[in-house]
Structure formats: structure tokens, C-alpha cells
Image (cartoon, rainbow, N blue to C red; front, side, top):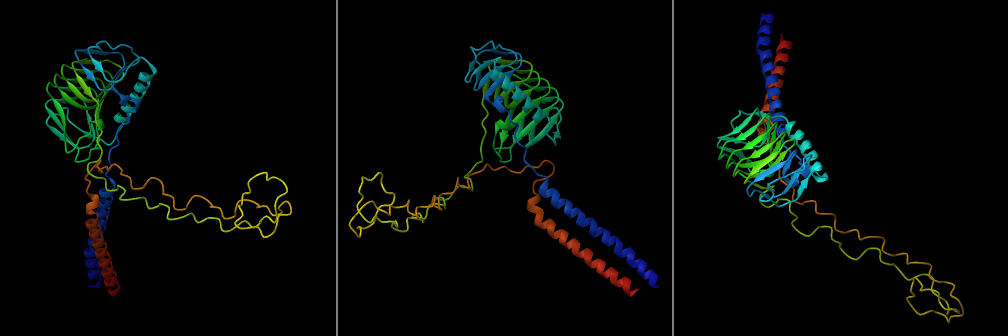
Length: 381
């Protein structure tokens, strides 16, 4: 009978202990994944390429009154026909060192964008889609209609599109923002060539391996940067993307005068009169001004050269800069607020941490209690 009871007890207790252990492990995974998996994507550094509305490898050609808000550059090519009638608000660099540096920076940025991970795979058609910040990979991208980018209230949100071959937009297509906008943080890394259809309203930095073509009337709030091929324009407008900062009043703005203002007179004022007063009138003209001025009338008539010239600067001179000088720049200057965006999974782990911790504690307590009961029963048997 005793062995039978022990076996039954084991059958009841061991599964319970296993369940408690599994529950504790699951809670631990949830806690760590919920609080440690979310991270905001960093912008792609364009370097000096950010100064250009258009960069090309072979040439830039233009038809009609196109307008470029920034500079135009070509390297290793050195031609850009069509300006005028096209207007370049910045500078034109054809085959020079400035264009070469910008092209080198473009190559670095292209490789950076192409190598970002993790990424989410999207179907070819982007029209009618709403996306949140992150990295997306597409085989060959097609935009027909409207692509909506939801920044979720973070003006510094980053969108990176890794396109293996071509990017093509249909006529009249558009890219729009909701809940804030930062066009400078949208990047289209294109494995071959990009073509914007007639009247397309596009947003972001196009980093193409080969060429970029903007058909009649297409607009771009961003940059058209082609590594090896040409950039072809036809009555287009390319405006500089605006990088927006945090909205609202920063919570860390200094609220008053720095707390380190000097609180009074320096503590190292001279503490007394020089100890070596002259005992008589000098027999010769003084050769210099004594460093320690007498503070009273001499006690005796001068009979000769003073034997007690002041020996130096009073010993109580201020010892240095007042100790209460203002501290360097207030440590509470505003810093851009970056919303922690999930790479994989949700971003509410911090909010659910107390609940998950409580569950883990209950599971652990239950396991200990069952273990104690089990040992007592074993000892009794």
C-alpha cells in the first residue's frame, strides 16, 4: 500500500512540478523579449551626397523647366544638358573632386541600406498599403495608387526599402505620411533602376545602382542618386526633404538660472598687511613699485635703504577661480525623443513587466509549495 501511495503521489506531483517549471521559463522569456527586443532603426548616413538633389554616374539630362532645390553632380561623367531651361538652386559639379566624394559617400550609404537587418518581406505591389517604421525587402517593387507611411507619432521614424531589382510607379501614384512626417528618413535602395511615372508624387531618397528616370510632371521630396547610370528629368521638381524634430516642448529644458553661479566674494582675499614695513626713507630712487603697499605710517624716520622691503605678493591672494563658477552647458538640454520601435514583436514589454513578474512569482511559489508537500509525503512513507 505504501509503495502504491508513493507512486500515485509521484504521478501527481512530478507533472505539476514540470508545469510550474515550464510556466516560469515562459514568463522569463516574455519578460526579456518584451523589454529587450525593441529598437529604433538608425538613419542611413548619406555623407556629402545629402547636399545633392541629383547625382549620376554617366550624365544628367533634362527637358523643360525642372527645378532642383540642391546641387547637381556627375562623376565619372561630366555632362548635364538641359540646364537651362532647368534650374539648379545649389551648385553644379561635373566630373570634379566634389562630385567624386559625393559618389563615394553614395556607395557607402547604398551598401549600408542594403545590409540592414532584420527585414520584413513585402509583395511587389505597394499601392493601398500602410506601413510602420522598419526595414522592408521586395523583389521588384510596383506602386499603383497610394502607399501610406505611418510614423506612429515619431517624426524621426526611419523607413528603409531594400528592392532587389526595379522600382516602378504608375502614373498619378503617391507616397503619403500620417501621424507625423520626416521625408529625409525614407530610403529606397534599388538594385537596378527606378522609374517614376507621369505625375507621381514621391517621397524619400532614391539610391539606385544603375539609373533613375522621372517622367513628365513627377515630383520628388527627396533625392535622386544613381551610382553608375544616368538621371533623366522632364519638367520635374525635386525639393529638399525636411528632417523634423520632436513635437511639443522638450521635457528637459532648463527651468531656471544655472545652479552654479558664484555665491559670493572669492574666499582667498589677502589676509593682512605685508610683514616687512620700511624702517626709513630710501637713500636712492626706488627702482620699482613695491608689490606690497604699506598700510600705515612708518614708526621711525628713514635713515637709509629699507631693510624690510615687501618680500612678494601678499600671501593671501585669491587662490584661483571662484569655486562656484557656472557649470558647463546645462545637462538638461533637449534631446530628440526617439520612440522605441519593434524590430520583431510588440513594443509594450515595459508596460506588461509588472504583470509578468507577478505571474512568475506565483509560479515559483507554487512550485516550491508542491516540492515541500512531495518531500513530506516521501518522508512519511
